[in-house]
Image 1 (cartoon, rainbow, N blue to C red):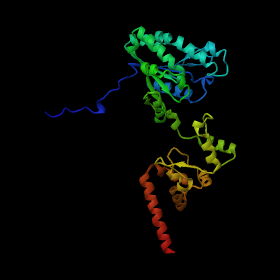
Image 2 (cartoon, rainbow, N blue to C red):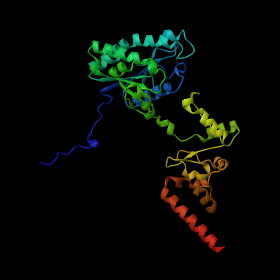
Image 3 (cartoon, helix red, strand yellow):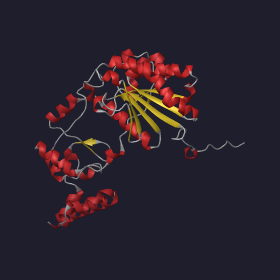
Image 4 (cartoon, rainbow, N blue to C red):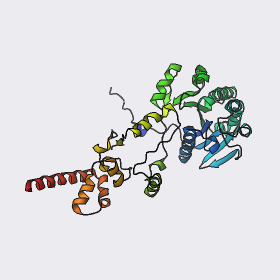
Length: 341
């Protein structure tokens, strides 16, 4: 008998949809200024907004500003500020008094989530995914799982625990965490660092919001460059920590080295590329290109030959075939000019 045909992925449907899944994220950091100390607050804010934009009922529980409302809606996300009574005593940010906050989160949040999110969702036939972040929430995961089992609600939930870095790994009971939750992390690098703890996390890379791909405001870029008083402004942001490679970045600037990304994803020295070779999202700044010693772009050469502003021809970059045609024409002209001499 002939082997049965297997349906392709085009015929598959999503396992979860906004009608079947609610999303809860539990994180020390969040969108409040009080709650931001690194990248985790940005991850929590943007990931939850992305879920909400797709139509999922989304709740973000975090150690929030003690002077803001305990619960409020923001861009489709229900913000729940936890530990506010403790944060009121620790005004220097989210991680001041963190052990007291961990105890409070572990002891009081599970029942609150069950009563206000998980039980209503289960009664409506929906599943709740609870994504907890970093070592601060490891014991909360166990506490929540235990309470769900006791109330026969565990089957209505998916518990995940995510690591962004190795901070606090020594305080985690890994066998218990691996038993009660699916462990995830943000990169293959982190996955390999976690193998010695006898866990094999699923890699779910961080994304970026679509607005990060919007065209650069060149007037703002020029204002920043003018304020710095340099044609080439190097800017780096991140924790001042060895894993952020500050030393290498500063050394590269000190040595006068600059590397630019090409459309093929490879980085090259400025004198090996032109503006044509940069990704289309990069600004067409001929002054900066000259300051960096970049090659003159094909469009610039063509504009010079034709006697028109270069901006008129930048649209060619969206059409590689036209760019190749211009390159051949310029090469032919250069050959003819040399022959005539």
